[in-house]
Structure formats: C-alpha cells, structure tokens
Image 1 (cartoon, rainbow, N blue to C red):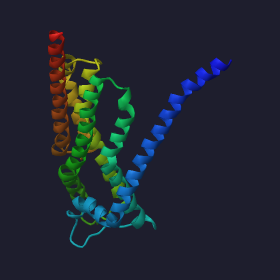
Image 2 (cartoon, one colour):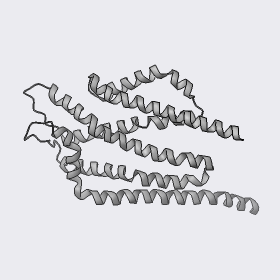
Image 3 (cartoon, rainbow, N blue to C red):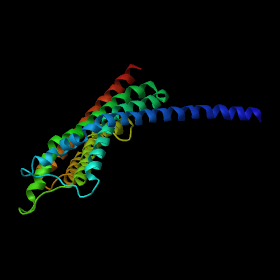
Image 4 (cartoon, rainbow, N blue to C red):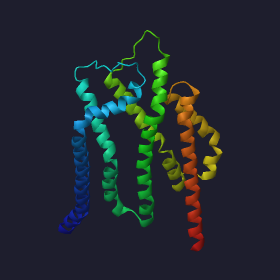
Length: 253
C-alpha cells in the first residue's frame, strides 16, 4: 500500500510542476500586457484618433464622430488601447508559450516550430497593416459616397471601433493562409499536387471571402482576394521546398 502511494505521488509531482510553470507563464504574459497597457493608456485618445483617421479624412471639414452612450468616450479608447497592448505583447506571449512546450518537442519539431511562430506573428501584423493602409481608405470612401446627399455621416465611436477591430482580425487571420497551407502539407493531411489541382476552387473562395469582407465592387473584392491567393501560392512554394528537403535528407540516409 505504501509503495502504491509513493508511486502515485511520483506520478503527480511532474503534473503539479507543469501546472505551476503554466501558471507562471500565464502570469508573466498578463503582467506584460498590463505593463504595455499602462504605458499606452496616457495616449489612448491619440491611438483612437490614429485608428479613426481613415474615416475622418473622408468626411466633410468640421465633421466629427459621436458618442451615443454615456461611457463611450472613455470605454472606446480604453478598449482600443487594451487591444493594442495585446497585439504588441503577442511576441512575448508566444515566447512564453514556446518556453512551456519546447522541452517536450523533438529537435526537428523545435527547428520547425520557431520559424512558424515568428512567421505567424509577422503575417498577422502584415494583415492588420494592409487593412489599415489599403482597405480602409477604399472601404470608407465607398460607404461615405453612396449614401443620400442630405444624410450626414456621424459614426458612433464605439460602433466604429467594433467594425474596424473585426476587420483587423479578419485580415490578420486571412494573412495566415501560407502558414495553414504549409502545415497541411507538412503534416501529411494533403499534398502539394492535391492543393494545386484545387486552384479554381481556392480562387473562387478567395473572391467569396473578399465579397463578404469588402464593399460590393470588383476593386475592393480583388484587393483582398488577390493577396489571399498569392499567399496561398507562397504556402504551396514553401510546401514544395520542405518536401524537397525531406527527399534530399532521405537520399543521404
């Protein structure tokens, strides 16, 4: 009975150590986000003004946004600053996640995981930047010019924030296509040849997504669909390169 109890305690000890380490990593991530948030909060209004600039630059001179809720002038910049803090802290948060799982990975998995994590972060940031600098001007230009002439555009600051955050997230995720494509090929779930044969469906899917996320005009739809398709091709390219590398290593063995 004593031997059985000692064995059970030994089995539970690693689990407890892992849970303690996980808690430590999570606390570090939360603290990093809070520190960044506290550093950015004094500039919350400036950050909101920057995010609102693509719309405000298209409105008639003297126009302004409105707040339909009592707390919106405080909550909207607060919420945006918190989201920006999370965005800025993503590399550190992923580093903490990597430090937690890395000891359990094989060397070849470690060599693959780190570039994938770094590429994922860079592509997500690139998607958000593309949305702000390329999509927003076209999108808001369409919205502000299609309404009746006697209707003044006065957007609620909270509604605007929710709208742009959805687009930031949508474009950030869309720019992860190369990573998703590469992982599907690397994991053996599909092959380069199979995905290459599905190009017509991929192109159609890209334009459908572009239609859902942008105004109903060909230019705006193409602005999202074409980069998505090009990123898909990039994923196929890296999939081919990875396959050739494996073949060369197998031949050497």
